[in-house]
Image 1 (spheres, each protein chain N blue to C red):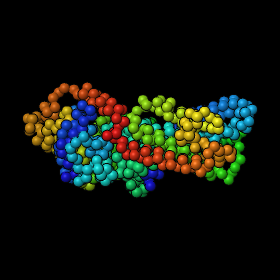
Image 2 (tube, rainbow over the protein chains, first blue to last red):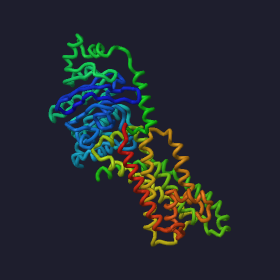
Image 3 (cartoon, chains in turn red, blue):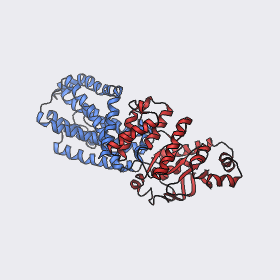
Image 4 (spheres, rainbow over the protein chains, first blue to last red):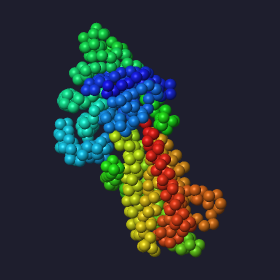
Length: 265
Length: 248
């Protein structure tokens, strides 16, 4: 198993962001984590990627505990974050190069791969422009290109296609599938686009209110709910209320907790 | 080592590219040097203390480094808010190296800023009497720069936004500057002020600078060096510890 999660819990004060989820992701698998806003997807990813300590429960990344063996775990994965993580003052090329250097990619290979990826995501002509001059879509493309620069065993993609045009989305998923096939990269992704999940993921877990409500292949989920499409299955499992408000309050609580506890736990 | 270097380089690049910031941050030292320097100069002279610009310049240089260094450390909050911090925190690099890279970058930036102010001081008539001790002055400048960048990083590690920033300015940074003897001699101070000055880390930095630049010292150079080195190590330790505990 590449990722093992057992009874994982994260609470912020009284707010339970993740309430006892369990799942496994096998090596070489593409696993999708679907859920409405504020369901606990990003919190889970943060716990898997050493950014946040779980309140309780067990996590293993390729056999190691991210809370204890932070550095060894960090060597195993790459991540494309949901929210921005570029340095605006640096150029696209400098952002790529900095990333490669931090991940120990040798200089020559770094340059080769940066060029290749920037061309793939059509940013090569703008490589020497500072990121602050980039549009939202260009930044997103750069984040993805950067996330693919080193070749990790596990790739975390947290809503990578948010705000991208269909062409770029297609480019991304083609590339991810290729990585998965050629290098047996394990992929853990979250997305709001059901047809994407259905297209690329071998297995899917649906999370709502911090709990996993269903898990299986897209086919199994559809059968389980008697739905024709994954989108219908998703709505059948999670209901049709809009969740922005609860997401807001969790975020607020999180911010409050951060302020008061100085963000250390 | 690569990690330290690239993070250092990033800080320096960001500084060099923000020209408005460089110019803006020269306003304050310039004002202190010209308004205080020439304003209090005659009184200082009549009190038998000699040339005030000579006395003040090391203090203003130290002040510049103090402010720039604390700000460079606190820039961490920007990186947290704009997201770049995440990128470095998931990288397979021990956090202490990330912290050291950032700190050395911030310290380098404040040293550059300090050197610009040295040039301004020379323009205002400041002259050093002792060229052989210039390397020693540099050691003092570097210690001040590293210590306060690390302190800024330590503070920023426990803050998630700028709400506490004003508090830190008014109750930490300003007192460190005003109580350090950067503006006045430490001889014959009231007891309370004397105690405050002697627990202020910058006091030893200013004193060491004055001693090496103009040959005037309140403590001995050995004391200044020892106190600054210990405090710099302590700030680095504290900064690394708090930085390693950051969760997002």
